Amino acid sequence: MPKVRRIIGVLSGTSVDSIDCVLAEFSGFGLKTKVTVKDFYSKSYPKQLRELILKNSNIKTSNVHDICLLNFIVGKAFAGAVLEFLKKRKIKASTIDFIGSHGQTIFHIPEEKSVGGFRSKSTLQIGDPSVVASLTGITTIGDFRNADMAVGGNGAPFAPYLDYIMFGSEKKNTALLNIGGIANVTILKKGCKKNEVHAFDTGMGNMVIDALMKNFYNTAYDKNGNISSLGKTNEILFNKLKAKDKYFSSKPPKATGREYYGEDFVNYILKNSKGIPKQDVIRTVTEFAAHTICYNIKKFLPKGCESVDEMYVSGGGVNNKFLMDCMKKSLTGTKILKLDSKGITAQNKEAVLFAALANETYNGMTSNLPSVTGASRDVILGKICLAS
Picture: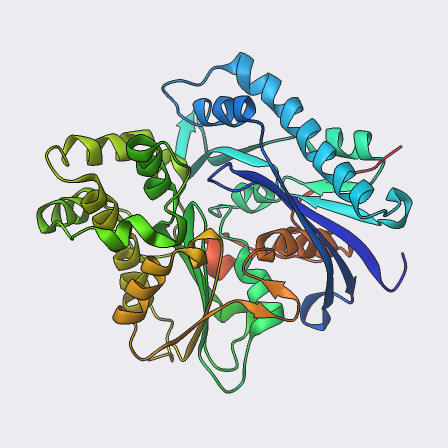
């Protein structure tokens, strides 16, 4: 393997809005990792495919026929996005060492269930990495969550590993917040060691707001937070959300997803917001999302960390000005910045993460964080699917 590895990271998040690809050059691994981000590309999901994925992310409307089919179709969509990326940038596939693919999560069970005397947590990411490898001709590493869950972990979040190896500081208490469909945070106290990394999903990010925007305005999201900024806070609805949402106040380690903040949660809001102006509903839910994020950051600081000095924000939520302003009002002692460091930006961070995890796996390194996921031990993540 060359000293500098050219890796493509590819994923689609909880919001199922696009397939994101990043090309990055890596040298070293672990704390000696050096990353140079070379390029980024994002391709929207075809509407029909997105709708079928969302349908099969809901336990009430999913079926094994669709899931079986989607496992291959999503793999083909990922491979197609990678090949389109390479073609548009005039990059030869033979110059890429491997792909790190997260796949598309359609269901996640972070609590143990019992069947036939066996107990296990479980998760399912479709878009099989062997399909991606076969169609691109590039070795692909994927299914990162499974090994962690096999040893009792929640299989999430994994962004803290990238945060730890790239953003730790000896002088500042640093947080890295990602607001995708779900929001997750990593808190690194000064001089943080691997077993001291503190991270978890805080709760809803954009997905509930996006679903309400689709319902009320037939648009994908609240661009720049324009709608929420026009509304007024409805205290009754806000307090109902606080009573309804049992996840955000639960103690880490914890992870969540569409199975909690999906259709049932959205329907609860719609049922309890009749007669409330729609812009007021969007504002109230956006303020609630900010509240859950800030509550978690204040409430669950790691031992030896009394406050967060700086917080770098990534994910689609960073473009919602109203949401960002809400957090700034709540976290008055924290400098809040849009992530743009070492070539890693708010837009490309998650794709860089899966390139980084692939780099660790290929080098035989463990990259889960038991202090974060709750796993019983360190494990090597992912499956290596060789291209032929």
